[in-house]
Length: 147
Image 1 (cartoon, rainbow, N blue to C red):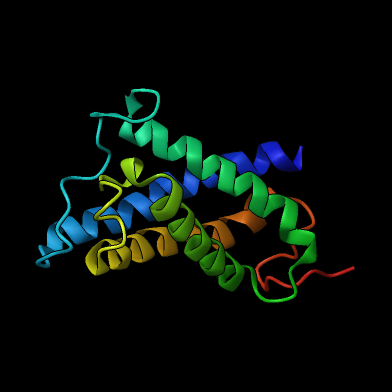
Image 2 (tube, rainbow, N blue to C red; image 1 turned 135 degrees about the vertical axis):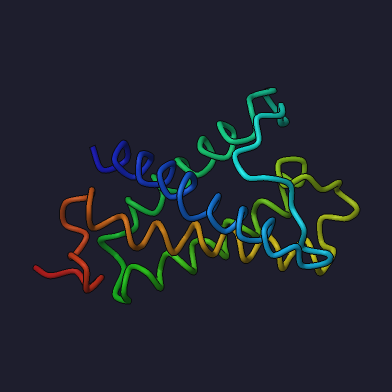
C-alpha cells in the first residue's frame, strides 16, 4: 500500500510542484532557462506518451521509492524530498536526457543542469510536503518519524 500511495504522491507532486516551477520559469522568461508552457501534451520518448503523462509516470516511480525510504529518514521530509529531487535530476540527466528535452551531448550543459535542479528540487520538496498527508507513519508535518 505504501508503494501505491508513494506513486500517487509522486504523480501529484509532479502535477503541482514540478509543473508549477515549470510555469514559473516560463513566465519569468529568464534567458537560457526559458521553457514552453507547462503541462505539455507533445509525445515524449520512450513510449510516445504525452510529456505530462510521462513525467507523472516517472514522478510516481520516484515517489514510490521515496515512500519506501520514509521510515529510514531522520531529517525533515521536506529536506529529504529536496535531496530526492536532486537525485532524480542527476538520474534524469544521466540516463534519460530525451525526457528532459536534451540530447545526450547537451544534457550536462550548465543551464540544463540548473533547470533540472530547479524543477526536480520543486518536485522533491512537493514529495516531502505531500507525503504526510497520504502516507501513514511518515511522521506528520515535523518530518521526523515518531515511534
